[in-house]
Image (cartoon, rainbow, N blue to C red; front, side):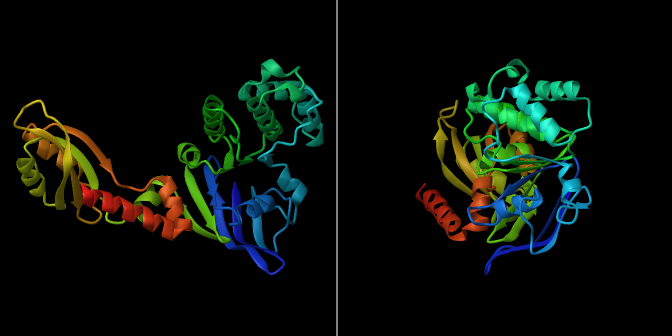
Length: 332
C-alpha cells in the first residue's frame, strides 16, 4: 500500500508538488496522470526514494521512504520509462545481478524461473539483452522489478515504444499483477489507463485535481448528460412516445440515419435529455418495445478519458471541443 500525505517539493522558488495527498490500496491499480511539468515525475521520484520532499510523507506499506529508505525500497519494484539494462549481459546474468543487488532471500533459481515464466521471457534467458527486441527488453525490466516479490510496483510508461500486440500482452500482465500487488501506473496513453486502472489520480500544476475511478470521473464532469439513440419507426410517433416518459425532459430529432425496412418508417437518431441524475435507459427500452419499435443504438455523451483529462488541465481546449460538437448538432 502507498500513502502520500501532504507532500510538497520545491525546486528553488518553484513549487513542483503542492501539498498533495492520495492513497493506493493493496490489490489496486492506480493510474497517475498529468501533463508535462505537472509534478508527476517529481512525485514518482519521491515515491521511489530517488529524491526527497521538502515536507509531507510518502509511506510504502507503512514505512516512510525518507526516514527508512532501505526498508521502504525493499517493498518497491520500479520500472522506469527506460529500463536500466546492462545490454552486454544475458537475461539470466542480469536478473541474477539484480537478485544479488536487492539482497533477495528467496531461493534464487526457482524465484527467477517463476518470474521469467510470468513475464514470458523464459525462452530468451540465455540471450544477450542487446540482441532482444524492445518488447522483450521491457519484459526484462519488468522482471527485475518483480525480484523479491515487492508488495508495490511503480511502472512509468511501461508500454512506450511497443507494438500493438506487445501493448496488449503487457496490459494483461499488469492486470494480473494488480491482483496481488499495489500498482501505480504512469502513462501518457490514456486508453491504456482506462483499460487497466481501477482508479485515476490526475495532477496539474502540482495539485491533485481528480482522484476517482474513470466512470465516476467522466460522469461527474459531463454536464447536461444526454443519450443518443437510433430507432426504426415513424419519427413523430417515436418522439411522442419518448416524450411521454416522465423522467425525460427533452427529445430532439437529429437526423435520418438510414432507411427502414418499411417504406413508411425510417431509422432516425434522437437526442434524449433526462432529468438531472436520472437513468432512463430501461424506461426507453420498455416504452419502445411495447410498441415494437426496434432500438438499434444507444450511447451516452459521457466524456471520454481524453476529454476528461483536457477539461481538468486545459479547460479552454475542452470548451472549444464542446462548442464544435454543439455546432455540429445544430447543423444537423
